[in-house]
Length: 141
Image (tube, rainbow, N blue to C red; front, side):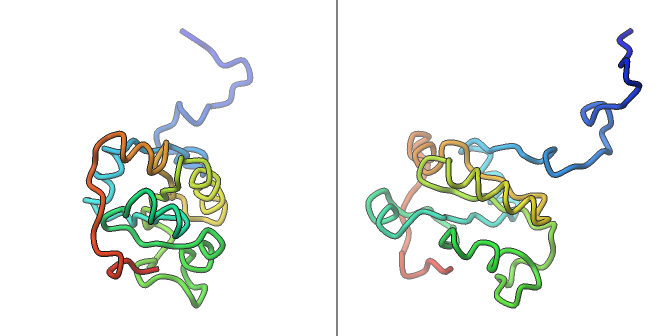
């Protein structure tokens, strides 16, 4: 039997313990689809140029990284109507997963504990041969 010399219980030992880091997972393309199907907000933070060159992410809300906090944190006055609480699941998507990982960590610091991102970004989405396209005019931000 292993004994922790400090006598402290580690987060992984207690299934009820919750911290922002406990939700710092990153999703695969298939997990991103599953999250969207169950109601997660899919947020595309790629630039207009990147979206035009790489393709559109079906079902995503397009937001510039500079407005994420204002549009996603509840009660900011500019938050999206879907952001009814800090419990909303959010999946950010960037070109290659770097910008989205940093942005998701910042959102978790602000209390959006279910914010995560697509590991590998839109490139991983394309590599998984998931659908792209849709009407760009239907994209909202």
